Image 1 (cartoon, one colour):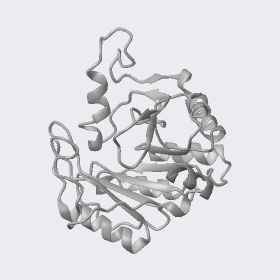
Image 2: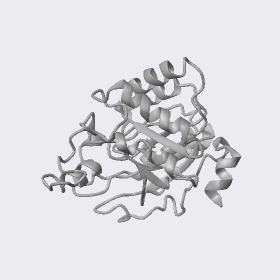
Image 3: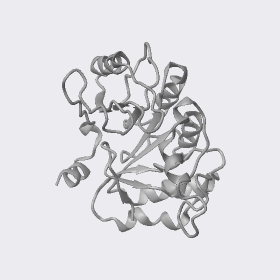
Image 4: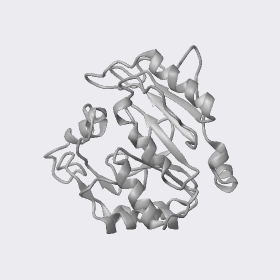
Length: 252
């Protein structure tokens, strides 16, 4: 089954792919790589080969077996749009999500142009199913183009993870984005997130009607700095894009 998770903005993780390669500074202290490499060389362990890219087709059926609706983070240990993942396998992942449509799936990538191109082709320019949320990870102003790629996808459920936030994003238009998640880096060698970087994004979200979720300040451990921004928790969630039948199940 999909696994429970401590990630605040989701209920569970599902990894039909594991392993990845770095594409930018946000990957430098990758938590998934750090976890996977702990198990390299352990015979029979799912990460026996560390963080090398691996497909897990036997996991494709897992969402169908989970009958209660969940928010599912897809590939928390990889990136579905890694260029070495065969397109027909990405098709199988999307088919599994389309079939088990009582869940909400959160697909997050740094390879934004590849996601945009794939989704446009799969749905022939039509709207992405409402229960499949597509998001991009943006760590600094040098990678804002990922937001533009995201906005070129025909979906009401676009989201952005500004985590780890490594620099000021600067001027940005988030209209058309449903949800923004902001967080500092955690773990060994964690880089500092400045308060103004987070508050600037919060103010943009308030201006552009985007649900804003402040996940953490980060530090040696995820909870080292707590979750308060300007003295309060920010737990914004885009309830208006969740179909009522799924929302009722999620909150039951």
